[in-house]
Length: 243
Image 1 (cartoon, rainbow, N blue to C red):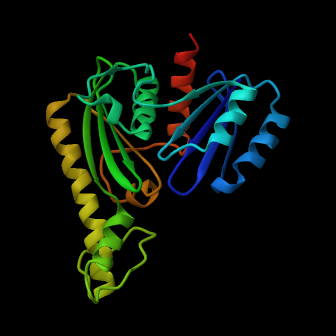
Image 2 (cartoon, rainbow, N blue to C red):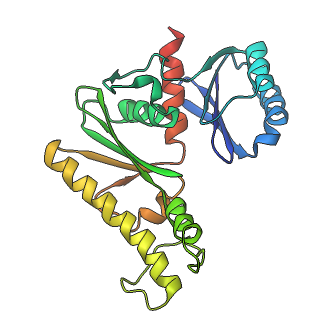
C-alpha cells in the first residue's frame, strides 16, 4: 500500500493507493500535515511505501515521520521515471511536470500526448508515442497575469476571475482586464495545441491543474483530466521505483 504526498505552493494533497487503485484522498493546509499523517496511518496500517513531491523544501520532521513509518522516496530530477527523459537539464525539471508526464505515460501509452497544467504557471509538456519526454513550455498562469497588471500599474484594479466569460469585448475596465487575462490564455493554449498538432500525429491533449475547470470551457480540442491525475502519476513513479 502506497502513501502519496503532493506539497504545493499553498496546499498539500495526499492519497493512498493499493497498487493502481485509489483508496483515499484529501487536501489541506501544510500546518495540518503531521496530524493528517497520524490519522492516515491509523486508518491504513498496511501502508509500506511513501513518495513526496514538493515544489518547496520539505520540513525535516515530515521526512523523518515518513522514514520511520515507510520505505520513503523524495521525488527529484534524479529519480528513476517510467519514460525516456530527453530534457536537456533533467535535474532542473519541476517535480509536478515529472509526475504529470508519468501519468500521461501510464494513461495514454503509445500515443503522442500534450499535457497542459494550468496552475500558478501554465506548463506544456510533450510525450511522444515512443514514450520519450521532449520538454515543453512554461508560461505565466491566470492569477499571475492578473496580479501582474495590478501590481505593475498605478490604477488598474485587481479583479476576480473565477468563471468562463460569455463576451469578447470588455465594456468596463474590470471586464477588459478579465477578458485580457482569460481570453489571452485561451488563445495561447489553442495556439500551442495547433502548433503541436501540426508536428505530432494524432495528438492527445490533456488539460489539468487548478484553473483547468475555468479554461476547459473555453479551450478547444482537449480532454479535461481528473483532479487525481498528478497523484496517479506520482503513484506510478513510486511503483516503478519499488523494483
